[in-house]
Image 1 (cartoon, helix red, strand yellow):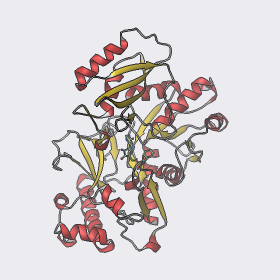
Image 2: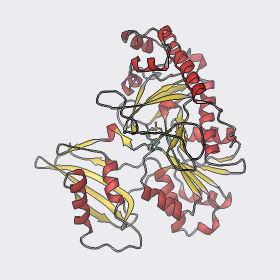
Image 3: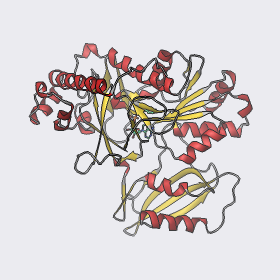
Image 4: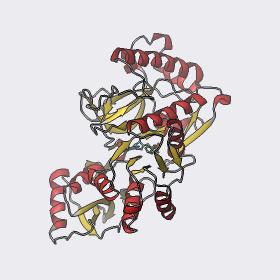
Length: 428
Ligand code: DLL
């Protein structure tokens, strides 16, 4: 298949693109940003010394602290007059991460998203309901730019406003929804509640910004009667949404290896994990001008998927983002990721995809309560909570109290869902 927005590159040509991009990036960061120059000098790196892709492993890491340190325009590597836009992530603690863009960065950003739309099989006749936040967040602007560049019709509604979402779905016959996974769930629930399935024409959904479980996805697909759905990763630091996309074969996420290099490292020693093992994704941009990234520690956990994809696209793949290393919480001495709890809940067909974990402290002891929703039209037997508690104990080695709540009882989100409430500092 011939793609419009993808270059045809042999493996050797791709490595050459990466090497040239790496040389350019190190040189550009060194000469353009004092902050980078200091970091590279301290690590004994002279840009001219980069002669092969293997040299990447000698470069120092960049972290979120580097971004915060240089606030408001961290790691800026071009003169300010070349900056045409900023975006920022809505970090929950501390200062926002602000990332600047040159016009070329914006052009690459829109190329990434156009690739996503192409890989998802959209055509210029698609009508794309963009139900993510506009403004400082990258999501709205990114999907919009990419959709227009691809040539489909953008319907830029933003998140929330469910009545208007439903109205646009029916009046405009939107064919593709772009949103967070939580917002897609909410839309599915609203379409069901209002009995609108016969009146809408949605065929595809592209969702990301947070992990989702197979159960959540199945509910969205079935309730909206979709032909296909696609997981889309991305982060503010690397332009925004659309660093890759799951293809129609659903065998992993293809990422744009001509625009950035991914390493998967063991977070404890920062060495590469064994092939196919889970580790932290570390990214290095190859043509990012305003804020190049050199070995940026994303904290996202995933693994490479080796081999060729049956879809035929010659771009490498990583697995879904399984969670973030900083999502991990320590409960009674055990390290736990919310995704592990989700995996246990996934096994019980009587439950919906929605859950919330609450940690609290009483008389100096930590407790965990997991609220999980009953699936609609199922009956719950009395022994379900203890069975789930037992499974959690077996799989995660901790005791938790499981509370089954009625369908739709847990809070819904227009953006990213908050699965963990840690109330342990306010001891009762
Ligand atoms: O969430 C960009 C985005 C918007 C991606 C809309 C997809 C759709 P940030 O707010 O900077 O950017 O958050 C980035 O969100 O490091 C991951 O931890 C998480 N994340 C993003 N996409 C996915 C996904 C946007 N598909 C952080 N699955 C990343 C799981 C995701 N986690």
